Image (cartoon, helix red, strand yellow):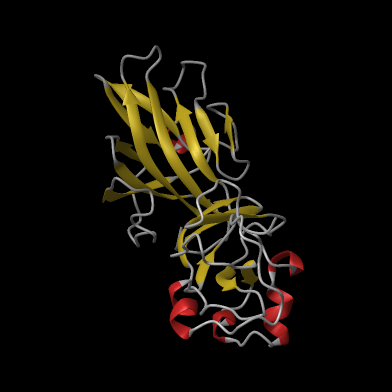
Length: 269
């Protein structure tokens, strides 16, 4: 069954839809969450129960401007995800949809837009084109040095590492119940040098989408809601947001949201 509607679609070549209907069913991309080799694209559409659609055409390309092309353009055909119309997700909410994009290249920039497709081959206006880049992101919890638990993290390898590992990018230490984030170079000259830039505070990780030009410091006191730009020693960057600092845990636990930018010299997260 296509889409979420239980109503059988009319045959191809049915009555033309009004412009108002096509405009009303224009998708609006609301969120894109990325992984190292993929992304989840979410959108909303003002669909009613009696609206009959074939599904959604999701276009993904490496050049901008696909949303400006007509439906019969070969470039648009080549960018159609899975070369087929997507019927919609299966959560039962016909006004909110999502799709999982897989087998993408880490660090490559992609442009995506969505069009609602109707029986007879008509389509809604395109959603706004959005750009995204597959890369590591998620949530990590670190503990202070010498605790023996998740003392360091390597953004390149996207995993926790030992405190004095040559791959370690940062660690935590405490002074009088205050947690500090620090560069491994503070422990030894042979370890990685990392600089931290305090970008501000935010409830959402999407805040502060670009790295500040400030050089940064090699240690910074941590506070809940704080957003930090991380300047790594190979001209790459990362972003952290302090989700929580559990001082009652044994050992103390600091949880971060993180996003790593794998393209050297890129200033946007």
